[in-house]
Length: 150
Image 1 (cartoon, rainbow, N blue to C red):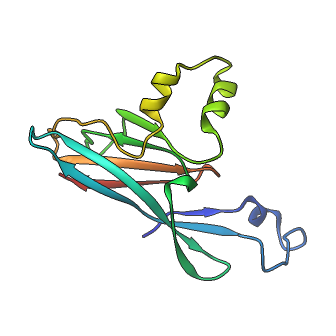
Image 2 (image 1 turned 180 degrees about the horizontal axis):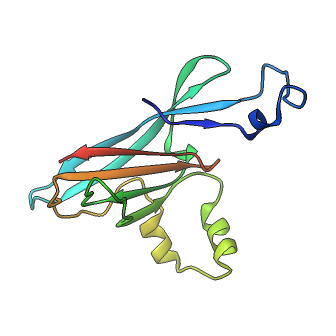
């Protein structure tokens, strides 16, 4: 089963729905493309390489790079019920630093930003639950979450 994001135009009925073949009525996400590595000190580090997206106009699966990801989060000790953001990262090419400062209406330390603007996580201890969860959000606000046993 894959999550599907339905376009809001579908709620408008046949009369108002655009009848062009170029409109995306839905978008299907696949799994985040990640690597989970363990270092010599038994710490775990996650690296995100991209995200697969189904293109409904062509029927093809597109492997997107990290530039198509707005942000990604890790629950480093996922309990199977609630996703708790324990690490947060931003990626993308559309100057997310400037957008975040505008949204927060505040300056952000460039040093702090550099630690958040990453495709690699900070090392963390093995989870007591044996599971981590990764949530990825693209620039349209679509999100997907995947659980991994470690």
